[in-house]
Amino acid sequence: MEFIVSSSKLSQQLQIISKVIKAKPTLPVLEYFLFTIKDQELHITATDLETTIVCTLDLDNSQADITFTIESKRLLSILKEFAEQPLIFSVEKTKSENDTTNETIAVTIKTNSGIYQLMGDVADEFPKIPEIDENTAHKFTLRSEIFIKGLQTTLFATTNDEYRPVMNGIFCEIFEDQINMVATDAHKLVKYNHKNFENNFSDSFILPQKTALLLKNINPSEDDDLQIIFNEKNIFIQIENFQLIAQLIEGKFPNYQA
Image (cartoon, rainbow, N blue to C red; front, side, top):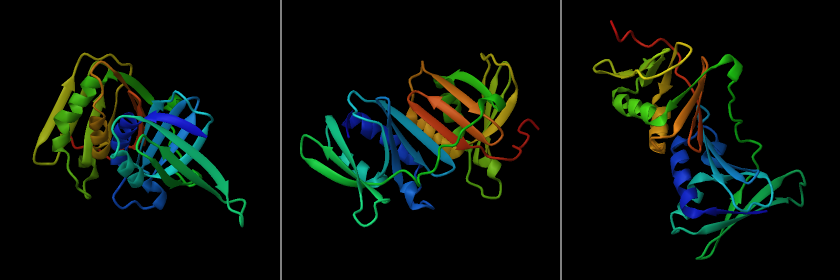
């Protein structure tokens, strides 16, 4: 099957989601992007098991639905070579002559300057995207400009302390009329407050530093809304054409008002 996608849009999205991939992942499959084509949309996923980020691109011409994986570093290296142009991806599944149950994926990228061939893989071993039951979770919507400003204000005060993990993130307090975002490394403390907010619950969570950095790198439009769903363990964030699912930091944040 074939699909066509803009080289610059694809490269830009992959540069953002690739930040979640660790330099030395615990599993080989975590070095790969998951490509899912469904209903004329391309969904690309990257994960380190604790944080998963998905970007979505519209396709003008895809011939069928398909799911496969591609090694991230190889694909990013190829995309750096191109100026803006349409890329034609051709994906072919083949079975081994000796083992008909074993499928391989051949990916060909046709460009203005030539043809590139990559070996993909089936998606069977790629981790499943975590889900949050909205019936048992809290949900709110906020202008992305406000939330990103809170991240920018507090991020520098987070730390990387394996003995005090609650300080490795941003403490977010949600009230019915305001939001507080707080970070501290025990030497300095920063608080961001937004008051023009309407909500029907009060709760809190600790957003991991890595998740905050990923959100900041997306750099959304100021007028876009950001949707957040969270429970005791996980958070789901929808921002523009990105979905981010992450494990929250467990524990009690220090009493910053003491």
